[in-house]
Image 1 (cartoon, rainbow, N blue to C red):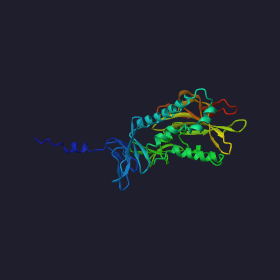
Image 2: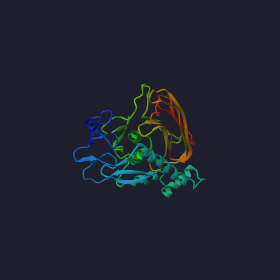
Image 3: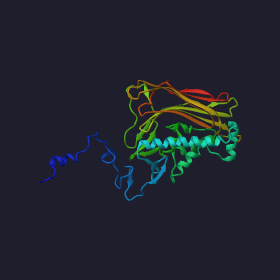
Image 4: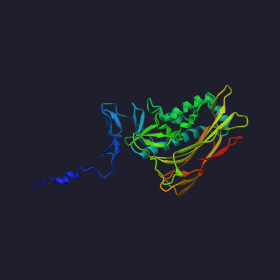
Length: 343
């Protein structure tokens, strides 16, 4: 008996899946079950991440961190992740490593004031951001967006804060998010390269990943900063930022504060102080912009030169309306406390 399938069955087995047509420059991939970018001549889609790699080129270096295999593309200095769950695991671990590293150090000197710890930092060359640098050092030749901001800010502080504040280009308001982005603010998930911009996360060559709410009064991917707060003697200064971010990786409402001290020979430096920061207010349903959740999160008091607090929600939850979300900075120094509304 002839067991050959009918022609119609043969055709049915080759019909494209029932998906929306891919945008120009993209094609449907059976393995990834999604639209992935068309590669230029001389390049092909990598079998591990789906991103474009040079024919005959060097395969990515695989580095394990937080139980996640991260693909490092040495030519483009991009970090690649298999899925958004892996990204979140890495971001959570970066947050935990930072907190554990600093807490372990501070616990060695429980009776020290913030100012005494500040002096000890100089003697011991203690770097509060060292855990991020340890992560970044796993990838040879890699320069993260976090490191770019740190270097630019140091130069700006040494120059007595003359010129634009580098913080104005920090779209995530988060060291962990910035640590996984290269110096073009890009990283890879499942073969697609993503980039942070002033309006949110976009796929490079593709579309914005921000959900368009039904009401124009409801927004996400927005950040504001309070004018610097100075102590009465003008030798100390604090900055407060409030932000809301929404993308395929995570949705967050957050507040972040930094503390600085004027150096005797000119310029400024990061400096410990007793800090507390909170973020509070109302988040909206990103689909309808209807009231959804009231949040209130606090971090501190801690003897740090910077501190963040965040509320993390599902991918559609991090939206708000003008004046409904606020961050508050608390210190023990007169003049260095204040509240900032996201508008």
